Length: 393
Image (cartoon, rainbow, N blue to C red; front, side):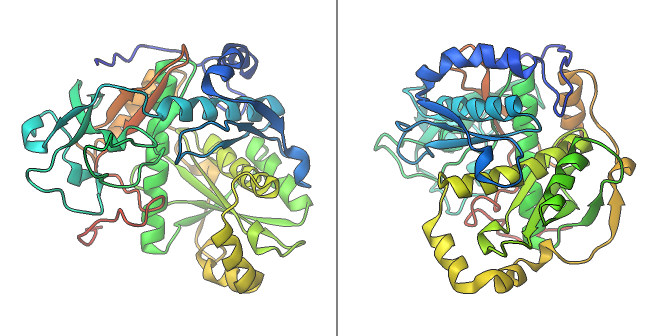
């Protein structure tokens, strides 16, 4: 599949950069919820005392291995509602549904036209004669067709009883958009975000404290946290590229509930939007926990045993002192065009990767893609997928 990136101007700039307003997007995707298996979309903002908009979308018949409740966040209720619906649509499109997959060894596919599975930081060795599934995509860095291990494309990945999974499938780089270019950009940004978080965890260092000293949507959300007795700790990660990744940790000093020591993160060409995504994701995590839609019994049992103070010490890197930087001093990579944002992001990524792969998984009129950047770290979401050799940095 050839992927042609067109010139597309951004049209909506309130807390995010989109091709359409949230109201227009809602009108487009609401009729698609039945096809995606969404049975209800509910406002769960009231579950938390913050009042920051959070919605959830339920998809009870999701494929085994996929989550069934999808959360959405934003500075306004319509942003959060559309966010939850779009995530549900992404997950629906990311499931395997009889899509074309070739079955061959890496050697048979050809090293010049296929991604080496080893470059995906896999947790096991692949035998020279081991056959796996392959899915066609497009390398937008080199403008050529490329084949990827299907394990990296679909979630949940279905082996069809023909092979053994290379790793646990996930949703990293799965993204939707009003137009293809919007989806591709957000897929790339998510892969960068997960890589930056992985590197920070490996180094046990988050980088620099981030200060937001002027009025903006992120500052307004942070003020809401602090008014409710919740300390917000913002970090600018020392990431793989110059594209800013912001991470946020919330310390609920009122409830002192270890389950409320939650984090969020966001990556965007615009630093202020990256920060807004990080802090609203914290609100999303809190509301989702209170709803019970994404509960982890093992994690909850662990937190009950260790308690608030010890759990905070275990995660001390999120709350420690560090050099600070003001968000106003950061470089803004964003432009008025999605294609130009993609080009600038590719310039940054191209310093660290040989390929940037895009697979079009659209199953409705709304574009959905999977972006895979071989060599970018993923240990934040899968501890088994780490670099085997020491990092030379």
